[in-house]
Image (cartoon, rainbow, N blue to C red; front, side):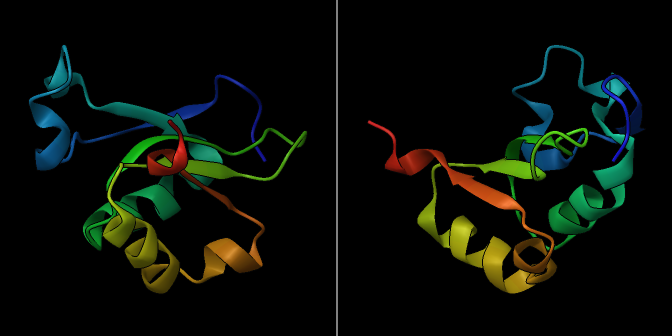
Length: 94
């Protein structure tokens, strides 16, 4: 786990480009999980946020409101379960 504020800037994915104020600046991701998040994006998993937990809690990723993407995340990156990732499905919130 990295310390809070230790980030890697990833290029803004095409699907996120239009909703970002300054997409050309990229997206800051916790450095220790940036490779996993980049891999998720490459496999079509769209995320709304992520956090490595900074040693205080398990890593988590917030997924878009599409149940198919929740299923895709589980199948595309089964290591998330093994590494105790919390997949937060915002579509369950009302």
